[in-house]
Amino acid sequence: MSVELPLDHLSELWPQTFRGARVGALLHPASVSAELEHASRILERHNGDLFRLSAFFGPQHGFLGQTQDNMVEWRSYEHPRLHIPVHSLYGEHREPTADMLKDLDVLLVDLQDVGARYYTFIWTMYLCMRACEKADIEIVVLDRPNPINGVTTEGPLLDLNYKSFVGLHPIPVRPGKTVGELARQFRDETFLECRLSILPMKNWDRKMWFDQTGLPWVMPSPNMPTLDSAAVYPGMCLLEGTNISEGRGTTRPFEIFGAPFIQGEAFCHELNALGLPGVFFREHYFQPTFHKFAGELCSGAQLHVTDRNTFQPFQTGVEIIRMLRKLEQFAWKQPPYEYEWKRLPIEVLIGGPMESLFGT
Image (cartoon, rainbow, N blue to C red; front, side, top):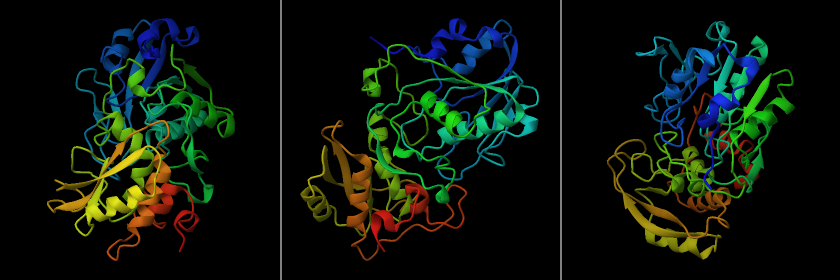
Protein backbone atom coordinates (compact mmCIF):
# COMPACT_ATOMS: atom_id res chain seq x y z
CA MET A 1 0.00 0.00 0.00
CA SER A 2 1.49 3.31 -1.10
CA VAL A 3 2.19 6.14 1.29
CA GLU A 4 -0.23 9.03 0.89
CA LEU A 5 1.16 12.52 1.35
CA PRO A 6 -0.70 15.35 3.07
CA LEU A 7 -0.08 17.42 -0.06
CA ASP A 8 -2.43 15.04 -1.91
CA HIS A 9 -5.15 15.52 0.72
CA LEU A 10 -4.75 19.19 1.42
CA SER A 11 -8.42 20.11 1.08
CA GLU A 12 -9.48 17.57 3.73
CA LEU A 13 -6.52 18.10 6.08
CA TRP A 14 -6.28 21.89 5.98
CA PRO A 15 -7.39 23.15 9.41
CA GLN A 16 -10.76 24.87 9.37
CA THR A 17 -9.38 27.65 11.55
CA PHE A 18 -6.86 28.56 8.83
CA ARG A 19 -9.42 28.91 6.01
CA GLY A 20 -8.98 32.23 4.29
CA ALA A 21 -5.60 32.80 5.97
CA ARG A 22 -2.75 34.54 4.17
CA VAL A 23 -0.27 31.74 3.49
CA GLY A 24 3.41 31.59 2.62
CA ALA A 25 5.00 28.28 1.57
CA LEU A 26 8.56 27.00 2.02
CA LEU A 27 9.17 24.64 -0.90
CA HIS A 28 11.85 23.13 -3.12
CA PRO A 29 11.82 20.94 -6.28
CA ALA A 30 11.02 17.73 -4.38
CA SER A 31 7.86 19.28 -2.90
CA VAL A 32 5.72 17.21 -5.24
CA SER A 33 2.58 15.11 -5.06
CA ALA A 34 2.41 11.37 -5.71
CA GLU A 35 1.64 12.32 -9.33
CA LEU A 36 4.72 14.58 -9.53
CA GLU A 37 2.74 17.82 -9.48
CA HIS A 38 4.68 20.55 -7.71
CA ALA A 39 3.21 21.93 -4.48
CA SER A 40 3.18 25.46 -5.90
CA ARG A 41 0.64 24.36 -8.52
CA ILE A 42 -1.51 22.58 -5.95
CA LEU A 43 -1.42 25.58 -3.64
CA GLU A 44 -2.31 27.82 -6.57
CA ARG A 45 -5.42 25.71 -7.25
CA HIS A 46 -6.55 26.17 -3.65
CA ASN A 47 -5.79 29.88 -3.71
CA GLY A 48 -9.00 31.70 -2.88
CA ASP A 49 -10.95 28.78 -1.43
CA LEU A 50 -8.73 27.30 1.31
CA PHE A 51 -6.43 30.30 1.75
CA ARG A 52 -4.81 33.29 0.09
CA LEU A 53 -1.39 32.41 -1.31
CA SER A 54 0.88 35.35 -0.54
CA ALA A 55 4.55 34.30 -0.76
CA PHE A 56 6.99 31.48 -1.45
CA PHE A 57 10.23 30.75 0.36
CA GLY A 58 13.13 28.56 -0.75
CA PRO A 59 16.00 26.88 1.19
CA GLN A 60 19.58 26.08 0.18
CA HIS A 61 19.94 25.17 -3.53
CA GLY A 62 17.11 27.54 -4.39
CA PHE A 63 13.36 27.40 -4.81
CA LEU A 64 14.13 25.86 -8.21
CA GLY A 65 16.96 23.61 -6.98
CA GLN A 66 19.45 25.24 -9.29
CA THR A 67 22.41 26.15 -7.07
CA GLN A 68 25.26 23.90 -6.03
CA ASP A 69 26.71 23.23 -2.58
CA ASN A 70 28.10 25.06 0.47
CA MET A 71 27.58 28.83 0.53
CA VAL A 72 26.39 29.13 -3.08
CA GLU A 73 23.68 31.69 -2.47
CA TRP A 74 20.64 32.74 -4.47
CA ARG A 75 18.55 35.90 -4.52
CA SER A 76 14.88 36.54 -3.88
CA TYR A 77 12.73 37.34 -6.89
CA GLU A 78 9.11 37.71 -7.99
CA HIS A 79 7.28 34.58 -9.12
CA PRO A 80 6.77 35.14 -12.86
CA ARG A 81 3.26 33.70 -13.01
CA LEU A 82 1.76 34.51 -9.63
CA HIS A 83 3.58 37.81 -9.09
CA ILE A 84 4.21 37.05 -5.42
CA PRO A 85 7.64 37.20 -3.76
CA VAL A 86 9.93 34.16 -3.68
CA HIS A 87 12.11 34.81 -0.64
CA SER A 88 15.61 33.35 -0.47
CA LEU A 89 16.49 31.72 2.85
CA TYR A 90 19.99 30.92 1.66
CA GLY A 91 21.56 34.25 0.91
CA GLU A 92 21.52 37.51 2.80
CA HIS A 93 19.08 35.86 5.23
CA ARG A 94 18.74 32.26 6.39
CA GLU A 95 15.89 33.07 8.78
CA PRO A 96 12.75 34.84 7.56
CA THR A 97 12.78 38.51 8.48
CA ALA A 98 9.85 40.33 10.07
CA ASP A 99 9.33 42.07 6.75
CA MET A 100 9.06 38.74 4.89
CA LEU A 101 6.43 37.55 7.36
CA LYS A 102 4.47 40.75 7.89
CA ASP A 103 1.65 39.89 5.45
CA LEU A 104 1.28 36.22 6.51
CA ASP A 105 -0.96 34.39 8.95
CA VAL A 106 0.44 30.90 8.23
CA LEU A 107 3.75 29.54 6.96
CA LEU A 108 3.39 26.13 5.29
CA VAL A 109 6.51 23.92 5.08
CA ASP A 110 6.73 21.04 2.60
CA LEU A 111 10.32 19.82 2.26
CA GLN A 112 11.74 16.39 1.43
CA ASP A 113 14.57 15.65 3.87
CA VAL A 114 17.16 12.86 3.45
CA GLY A 115 17.58 11.78 7.07
CA ALA A 116 20.93 13.33 7.99
CA ARG A 117 21.72 16.20 10.36
CA TYR A 118 24.00 17.95 7.87
CA TYR A 119 21.24 18.37 5.31
CA THR A 120 20.26 21.99 5.78
CA PHE A 121 16.54 21.89 4.97
CA ILE A 122 15.61 20.89 8.52
CA TRP A 123 17.58 23.87 9.83
CA THR A 124 15.78 26.23 7.49
CA MET A 125 12.57 24.81 8.98
CA TYR A 126 14.04 25.30 12.47
CA LEU A 127 14.81 28.97 11.77
CA CYS A 128 11.35 29.44 10.28
CA MET A 129 9.86 28.07 13.50
CA ARG A 130 11.93 30.53 15.51
CA ALA A 131 10.84 33.44 13.32
CA CYS A 132 7.18 32.37 13.37
CA GLU A 133 7.23 32.04 17.15
CA LYS A 134 8.52 35.62 17.42
CA ALA A 135 5.94 36.92 14.93
CA ASP A 136 3.06 34.83 16.38
CA ILE A 137 2.47 33.17 13.01
CA GLU A 138 1.11 29.64 12.65
CA ILE A 139 3.43 27.10 11.06
CA VAL A 140 2.03 24.06 9.25
CA VAL A 141 4.41 21.22 8.34
CA LEU A 142 3.37 18.69 5.71
CA ASP A 143 5.04 15.47 6.77
CA ARG A 144 7.10 13.35 4.36
CA PRO A 145 8.95 10.02 4.70
CA ASN A 146 12.45 9.75 6.04
CA PRO A 147 13.91 8.09 2.92
CA ILE A 148 16.47 6.00 4.82
CA ASN A 149 13.83 4.71 7.31
CA GLY A 150 12.54 6.03 10.60
CA VAL A 151 14.05 3.34 12.81
CA THR A 152 17.83 3.56 12.58
CA THR A 153 19.77 6.25 14.43
CA GLU A 154 23.52 6.73 14.26
CA GLY A 155 26.25 9.18 15.19
CA PRO A 156 26.85 11.54 18.12
CA LEU A 157 24.42 14.15 19.38
CA LEU A 158 25.30 17.69 18.38
CA ASP A 159 27.36 19.51 21.02
CA LEU A 160 25.73 22.95 21.26
CA ASN A 161 29.19 24.53 21.43
CA TYR A 162 29.52 23.48 17.78
CA LYS A 163 26.25 24.86 16.45
CA SER A 164 26.17 25.84 12.78
CA PHE A 165 23.83 25.81 9.82
CA VAL A 166 24.45 22.04 9.54
CA GLY A 167 23.38 21.56 13.17
CA LEU A 168 21.38 23.90 15.39
CA HIS A 169 19.77 21.45 17.86
CA PRO A 170 21.10 18.35 19.67
CA ILE A 171 20.05 15.50 17.42
CA PRO A 172 22.22 12.59 16.20
CA VAL A 173 23.76 12.58 12.73
CA ARG A 174 21.09 10.14 11.60
CA PRO A 175 18.06 11.05 13.72
CA GLY A 176 15.62 8.45 12.34
CA LYS A 177 12.75 10.95 12.25
CA THR A 178 10.55 12.58 9.64
CA VAL A 179 10.46 16.33 9.09
CA GLY A 180 7.18 16.49 10.99
CA GLU A 181 8.63 14.57 13.94
CA LEU A 182 11.68 16.84 13.99
CA ALA A 183 9.43 19.91 13.93
CA ARG A 184 7.55 18.55 16.92
CA GLN A 185 10.83 17.89 18.76
CA PHE A 186 12.09 21.41 18.01
CA ARG A 187 8.81 22.88 19.28
CA ASP A 188 8.74 20.75 22.45
CA GLU A 189 12.38 21.37 23.33
CA THR A 190 13.03 24.92 22.15
CA PHE A 191 10.10 26.83 20.65
CA LEU A 192 7.50 26.22 23.32
CA GLU A 193 5.28 29.09 22.14
CA CYS A 194 5.45 28.15 18.46
CA ARG A 195 1.96 27.41 17.11
CA LEU A 196 2.68 24.24 15.15
CA SER A 197 0.39 21.94 13.17
CA ILE A 198 1.65 18.80 11.43
CA LEU A 199 -0.40 17.35 8.60
CA PRO A 200 0.20 13.57 8.67
CA MET A 201 0.98 10.96 6.04
CA LYS A 202 -1.11 7.83 5.60
CA ASN A 203 0.29 4.28 5.39
CA TRP A 204 3.87 5.18 6.28
CA ASP A 205 5.69 2.52 8.31
CA ARG A 206 8.86 3.46 10.21
CA LYS A 207 10.80 0.57 8.69
CA MET A 208 10.17 1.77 5.13
CA TRP A 209 12.91 2.95 2.83
CA PHE A 210 11.82 5.42 0.18
CA ASP A 211 11.62 2.82 -2.58
CA GLN A 212 9.01 0.98 -0.48
CA THR A 213 6.68 3.98 -0.23
CA GLY A 214 5.34 3.88 -3.80
CA LEU A 215 6.30 7.56 -4.15
CA PRO A 216 8.48 8.97 -6.93
CA TRP A 217 12.01 10.11 -6.08
CA VAL A 218 12.74 13.70 -7.06
CA MET A 219 16.19 15.12 -6.38
CA PRO A 220 15.82 17.34 -3.30
CA SER A 221 19.18 18.92 -4.17
CA PRO A 222 21.58 18.76 -7.14
CA ASN A 223 23.89 16.19 -5.54
CA MET A 224 21.22 13.84 -4.19
CA PRO A 225 20.24 12.10 -7.45
CA THR A 226 19.05 8.79 -6.02
CA LEU A 227 18.07 6.94 -2.87
CA ASP A 228 21.49 5.25 -3.10
CA SER A 229 23.05 8.71 -2.61
CA ALA A 230 20.90 9.33 0.47
CA ALA A 231 21.78 5.92 1.94
CA VAL A 232 25.51 6.72 2.10
CA TYR A 233 25.23 10.47 2.74
CA PRO A 234 25.22 10.37 6.60
CA GLY A 235 28.82 9.15 6.43
CA MET A 236 30.20 10.24 3.10
CA CYS A 237 29.26 13.88 3.64
CA LEU A 238 32.09 13.92 6.20
CA LEU A 239 34.52 14.04 3.28
CA GLU A 240 33.37 17.61 2.69
CA GLY A 241 35.56 18.39 5.71
CA THR A 242 38.67 17.04 3.94
CA ASN A 243 40.68 17.56 0.76
CA ILE A 244 39.30 14.28 -0.65
CA SER A 245 36.68 14.46 -3.40
CA GLU A 246 33.26 13.27 -2.25
CA GLY A 247 32.27 12.74 -5.87
CA ARG A 248 30.82 16.17 -6.64
CA GLY A 249 31.23 16.87 -10.31
CA THR A 250 30.33 13.26 -11.16
CA THR A 251 27.08 11.35 -11.66
CA ARG A 252 27.50 9.50 -8.33
CA PRO A 253 28.19 12.09 -5.61
CA PHE A 254 28.81 10.59 -2.14
CA GLU A 255 28.78 7.04 -3.52
CA ILE A 256 32.29 7.52 -4.86
CA PHE A 257 35.32 9.25 -3.41
CA GLY A 258 38.95 9.69 -4.30
CA ALA A 259 41.94 11.89 -5.04
CA PRO A 260 44.89 11.83 -7.47
CA PHE A 261 47.21 10.58 -4.71
CA ILE A 262 45.13 7.56 -3.58
CA GLN A 263 46.09 4.07 -4.78
CA GLY A 264 42.57 2.73 -5.28
CA GLU A 265 43.26 -0.99 -5.42
CA ALA A 266 45.36 -1.10 -2.24
CA PHE A 267 43.06 1.32 -0.43
CA CYS A 268 39.97 -0.78 -1.18
CA HIS A 269 41.78 -3.91 -0.04
CA GLU A 270 42.49 -2.26 3.32
CA LEU A 271 38.92 -0.99 3.69
CA ASN A 272 37.34 -4.34 2.83
CA ALA A 273 39.65 -6.02 5.37
CA LEU A 274 37.89 -4.01 8.11
CA GLY A 275 34.76 -6.09 7.56
CA LEU A 276 32.40 -3.13 7.85
CA PRO A 277 28.79 -4.34 7.77
CA GLY A 278 26.68 -4.13 4.61
CA VAL A 279 29.21 -2.54 2.28
CA PHE A 280 31.84 -3.49 -0.31
CA PHE A 281 34.48 -1.11 -1.62
CA ARG A 282 35.34 -1.43 -5.31
CA GLU A 283 38.28 0.51 -6.76
CA HIS A 284 37.03 3.35 -8.92
CA TYR A 285 38.51 6.05 -11.17
CA PHE A 286 36.86 9.32 -12.09
CA GLN A 287 37.54 12.82 -13.36
CA PRO A 288 35.33 15.45 -11.70
CA THR A 289 33.94 18.10 -14.03
CA PHE A 290 33.88 20.65 -11.20
CA HIS A 291 34.71 21.04 -7.49
CA LYS A 292 37.74 19.30 -5.92
CA PHE A 293 40.30 18.06 -8.48
CA ALA A 294 38.20 19.25 -11.44
CA GLY A 295 39.63 17.78 -14.63
CA GLU A 296 42.12 15.55 -12.79
CA LEU A 297 42.13 11.77 -12.71
CA CYS A 298 41.16 10.56 -9.25
CA SER A 299 41.54 7.07 -7.83
CA GLY A 300 39.48 5.82 -4.94
CA ALA A 301 36.41 3.70 -4.38
CA GLN A 302 32.74 3.27 -5.01
CA LEU A 303 30.65 2.13 -2.06
CA HIS A 304 28.37 -0.77 -2.94
CA VAL A 305 25.80 -1.18 -0.18
CA THR A 306 25.15 -4.93 0.00
CA ASP A 307 22.75 -4.84 2.97
CA ARG A 308 21.23 -1.45 3.70
CA ASN A 309 19.67 -2.63 6.97
CA THR A 310 23.04 -3.51 8.52
CA PHE A 311 25.07 -0.82 6.74
CA GLN A 312 26.25 1.94 9.09
CA PRO A 313 26.94 4.98 6.90
CA PHE A 314 28.28 7.27 9.62
CA GLN A 315 30.69 4.72 11.06
CA THR A 316 31.75 3.80 7.53
CA GLY A 317 32.57 7.44 6.78
CA VAL A 318 34.59 7.70 9.99
CA GLU A 319 36.59 4.55 9.16
CA ILE A 320 37.30 5.81 5.63
CA ILE A 321 38.72 9.06 7.02
CA ARG A 322 40.78 7.21 9.63
CA MET A 323 42.34 5.24 6.78
CA LEU A 324 42.83 8.35 4.64
CA ARG A 325 44.69 10.11 7.45
CA LYS A 326 47.55 7.66 6.98
CA LEU A 327 48.24 9.29 3.60
CA GLU A 328 50.87 12.05 3.61
CA GLN A 329 48.82 14.22 1.24
CA PHE A 330 45.63 14.06 3.31
CA ALA A 331 44.49 17.36 4.82
CA TRP A 332 41.54 18.77 6.69
CA LYS A 333 39.58 21.37 4.77
CA GLN A 334 39.93 24.85 6.26
CA PRO A 335 37.06 27.28 7.03
CA PRO A 336 34.71 28.73 5.99
CA TYR A 337 32.05 26.04 5.80
CA GLU A 338 28.31 26.75 5.99
CA TYR A 339 28.87 30.23 7.41
CA GLU A 340 31.18 28.96 10.16
CA TRP A 341 34.41 30.93 9.84
CA LYS A 342 36.46 29.67 12.80
CA ARG A 343 35.97 25.95 13.40
CA LEU A 344 37.27 23.26 11.08
CA PRO A 345 34.57 22.01 8.69
CA ILE A 346 35.01 18.45 9.99
CA GLU A 347 34.13 19.65 13.52
CA VAL A 348 31.12 21.53 12.18
CA LEU A 349 29.98 18.33 10.47
CA ILE A 350 30.45 15.92 13.38
CA GLY A 351 29.05 18.56 15.74
CA GLY A 352 31.84 18.26 18.26
CA PRO A 353 35.63 18.25 18.71
CA MET A 354 37.59 16.39 16.05
CA GLU A 355 39.50 14.47 18.72
CA SER A 356 36.31 12.72 19.82
CA LEU A 357 36.37 10.61 16.65
CA PHE A 358 39.77 11.01 15.02
CA GLY A 359 42.25 11.67 17.84
CA THR A 360 44.92 14.34 17.61
